[in-house]
Image (cartoon, rainbow, N blue to C red):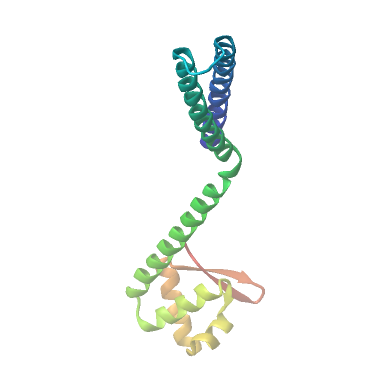
Amino acid sequence: MENKKLGVTILVLGLLILFVMIYFSNELTKVSEEAGCFQNEKCVKVESGFSLIHTSFGIIGFVFALGFYLLFFNKTENAILKRLEDEKNLKLKDSKFDILLKALDEYEQKVIRAIKEQDGITQATLRIRVNLSKAKLSYVVNELERRGLIKRIKKGKTLAIFLKE
């Protein structure tokens, strides 16, 4: 939004300068016609004025291009920033998850990884995926729930297991 305001401001400023330069150019044209502009002192001043005007028109063209860019074409910058922010948040989540895994034993790590891969996994499916006995899996899941790392939600006759944020 800030870029749009800046773009509009630059375009308005460019228009004002353009009108001043057109007026100045017309005045110089009148002076050159009155002087007959051959090689004399007045013509040299008029020619240097025209050089200044031509340079000014180039600068005004740049200002207009910058204004239009900021006004219409700068939307990709926000998309890039959003994507970078999302990637940063994903990496941060992954690093937090890796730190969490370091605090767990190997069985708990297996269970947490399986739950992360398939959030809402049933305990029966989880048992198959991590290759643990019912008793061992029940113990590990109870311990993880007690620590507040997972939550179990009733899903029919079984329980779905989710990671807590």
